[in-house]
Image (cartoon, rainbow, N blue to C red; front, side, top):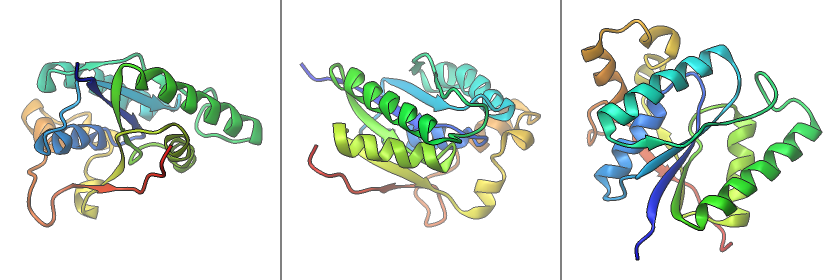
Amino acid sequence: MKKKRLLIATLGTSPAVVTEAIDLLSEQGQRPDRVCIIKTRDPDVNKSYELLSKHIPVHCGIELEKPIEIQSYEDIDSNEMAIKFMRHACQVLKTYSNNYECYVCIAGGRKVMSALLALAVNLYGAERLFHIWAPRDLENDTEIRIIRSYPENVLIKTLHPKLGDPDSPRIVDLPLTDA
């Protein structure tokens, strides 16, 4: 029996990186069945998650797992927090890999979250580890502070930009070691 696909994604203040990952994976025949978000407690990040938690089930037809929230407010700001996050990231991968093919997107969120999650992937494995490249003008226009007031039709175009052009968002695969 084929395993279902899970997108594990770090989230910051640009929710479009998650919807772009869904769209790009779908375009490549690897549409996720579920999405697991890793995020901080930052108010703008929470607004990004709230937007996605309403948008993804309705517009993408995909369910979200309960979000994984790091303990500190804005960042991993101590050695102890880095170790704790790393352990948590490893546990997430070990737990989900039993039932899912894991596709891990580290394009959003804090740099240290992405770095530690990438390290965890290289320890525990995943089908794919990647980030989303987007042109700077598109990247700047997807911040939650800007898009939260968009009308629905503009919001959908922002969260699901046209794909396939040289200046469209694209997946950049990152190297994996044999876990």
